[in-house]
Image (cartoon, rainbow, N blue to C red; front, side):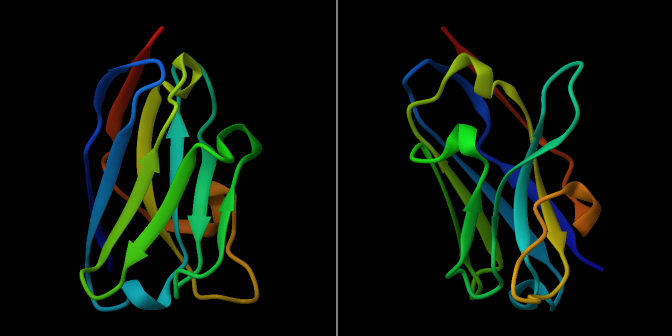
Length: 126
């Protein structure tokens, strides 16, 4: 079992920055692919960024490349998402997710993740 708790969401103007954190409990955090997903009203949940268990291999959806940075601290059991140059279209509920072990890649779709946090709202005003 992995319990995930997100924090750091809020309201910001376009061009601003936010840093999301996800605190994980359980003893398998460092063995798992981790990811950030988001869901806007009326839209499906999409993968934003995922990262390998050792933190060396990140993946980003095209719409956030160059603006968002995913990282993790395995000693602290915490996942981060640094979001810069925020746009109105980044407005969504953001979820932290824990997936499986590294198999040469980390899944980028929600089906590959079986533990989810409760979400934190990010609102970007233009």
